[in-house]
Length: 208
Length: 208
Figure (cartoon, rainbow over the protein chains, first blue to last red):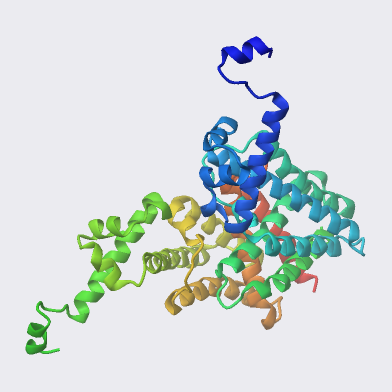
């Protein structure tokens, strides 16, 4: 873009680098709002105010508020991935069962510490997640698949299925306990539940 | 209440039987709306119109719209309980693994057939569930606990924990697949995931 072009448009258009910076600022603002108040607190006006831009810039950068939310969720997922990778590196055992429980503990702690942003990941969406977000989801499962592969007890084809089954299980226990949907069992009972299920499942791998 | 009392109040108060009938009509209306459009479709005005009453009657009968929603959810949970009990009775095998998979299949089918009402059960709530709703939740887990008890592989104290762990796992897989949160795996992959996890876990019971 040259000076003449800028003048023709009436006001200077932003350079690509500026647009990317604006985009990142909007995502960071959306993430901060999600962390504080969850999905119900997320509005285009609130994001714009927090990012110090006009409301219109939200819709210039994102096709919808929902897509901005999905991008903010992707940041949370990358934080979760880093947390899980760190927990796995710090896990004192090389046994599959212990490594899965190290991951589960890190997941539980993350859900507690980033509660509103974590819950926001699981809100319903009406549009497909962008490819980059799909890649972030795949990277999360990749950590769990690596542990199962290292364990050497499952056929390669069974690994993605079991990784998602275990992931969903730990998520299901965490989420339902958080909702208060497990009857007399609550958040404090999640760790023993995860422990019981993971230990039984891993023993079951061995029995193949 | 006597005739003099009624006159003092300006208009006749409803008898207890009528109030109970109104209450049931409002719950039925709320459930129909949840089945059609989920939680976002539920409004006091919509419920009242559907039940053929004034909006005020919603708040005469229930402290909040949310409490009405919890009562409607309880109806869905009782339908789910009947579905699961029926599936278990019809299950051709007496093996623990097969019986758990009969229950999981029935759960998956119910979630598909009553999708919006099923998803409404897992919406966040801001008030405690009434005792009657807690009892409905306990009855659901009771079915699963019975299967584990019949299997004779788990200590009595371990049964409620494992029942909720398996329940949450199947729920987590169903819910995340439904959300599109399992990467390349989708709703059609839930059954193989449940199968893999339940088989491994039950083999793990046996290895105790």
